[in-house]
Length: 265
Image 1 (cartoon, rainbow, N blue to C red):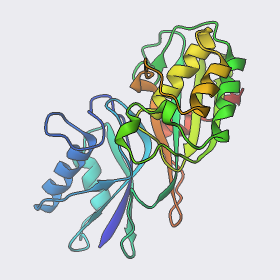
Image 2: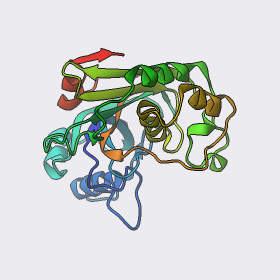
Image 3: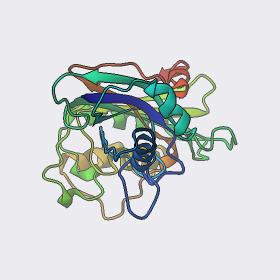
Image 4: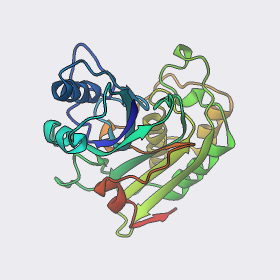
């Protein structure tokens, strides 16, 4: 029977989701744990890929289990997995739903703090910019849903069939104290490094190194700048994945707490 697993992970010590031969990944850690429990090789399919160091406050994968477990799989799997990976729900599914191809909407959050804080360093990206032009950054963010081709925000656009994405919403938020920023974006799909490149551009706009018109020009003309500096991976979270047949609120405490104190710019 096919099962969907609703999970979250802190990605700092992993080389992303996708299994690699040369480094530890989240997929490998989970497959190793499931194989240890069931005593046969278990392969899983994730809802997408994340870069090295990127987190997920909500993520899904599917796998098929030969027989319904006669033990508490949720408890046992969480006990075997390391502390930086958590399983929230295990959902039996009818038919052959696909964790990756059936996703209709994905949301990412990128967190920035502008003062050094040892308790934020692994959960948010530190950029010591005290005087960012937040109005210009917010104006640039508002432009994004107007377009449907994001070649200008893709690290390797020639390696994909197309660079079109349906960006449904994008917003920039600030916390009550004015020390933290959150960029949120929702789309049907994302391109390689698209969100980190976008945040890097937004920071350039906030510092006065790029105008909003230049930013829009690159997108409208599908031009990939010669120099691309993605923002750091630390602050990036896959925060919501939605299917037509499955829509679950994130269970991660960080994602829930992180969205309770923000004001949209």
